[in-house]
Image 1 (cartoon, helix red, strand yellow):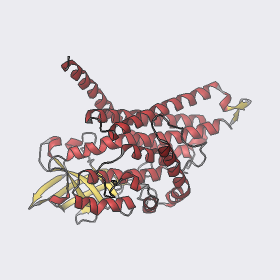
Image 2: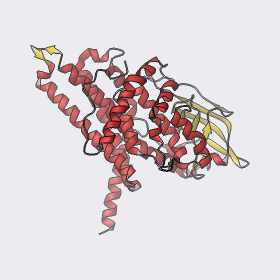
Image 3: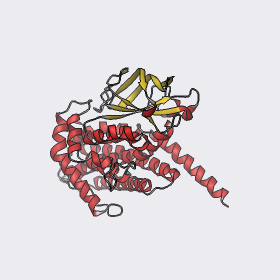
Image 4: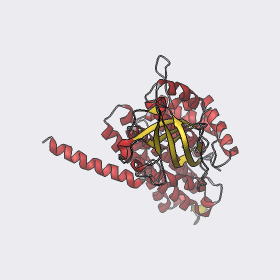
Length: 402
């Protein structure tokens, strides 16, 4: 069971930040997920890309929300963090597979949208938005995880282009993606300054890979590059400045990882409230026990605090705040929301007892699913490092202005 079909109601009202239209959007997305996406997700093969889910989200306009168009109808290059967070939280509260499928389309395609040539954007973004092309973000390597600047996948000069040699690992949607955003080293021994981002079609000669099985069924694997030819027109951004492309995407996505976590946490909290209000024990209901009520109160309070951090970070991104503030807020949102979701889901299982650990139970599924959020797109330890550095930088800035 991967859907939260037994939830106790809609997501809490968030009048502090969301408009009435945005709240309606949440309910619309949840309804589409319940009635259309859940059956397709449950019929899919665990650990593989579910193209039916993607195509349905494309037809229902959910993926279009990731790639807004301007008033003139042309493709906008500016992503909307708030819309991304709304979509991810709403979907996660109902069906995590659908949420993940949507999020990975954005993660893989946003570098193309924001930094690719007009020709590359026109070729791939409409297909990704329609759910007919699968996108992937290929950054991590065996020796370059948290230290992304240490990557070694080689981009060797070849005429007016390059040839890629090496392997990526822990790449979501690999090896089934149709288009990869690939980060490769174009200048040896230059750290973050010698990395270039490329748009690489999955069908190109020399691209391979294998699936990796995780505890939570997730489309993920390796991608290998055996002399894969890439053209200058497939560079995203500037040569040797690909790390900026990666960080720009991650600053956008970190709050939305928090939104994903909040959605899962909300599903777990709803399930715990429902269960404890009907489970008889000690001559009454579990909800009569002060210890239970206090546990739920802690869960709800930390979850709402996470939601506030997530939407504040999204608002900062959309309002054009400084890169310093965006990075700082994004790190806080991802850190607190993912750690909180782990706590809330674990607490919900504790209140359910053994029932919450039965294979196929909503909480068993969420327990497996939530763990990875504290690792990918910057582990919790990395987020703490980012926050700590920003505090010292802010302190230095204050001193310099006195």
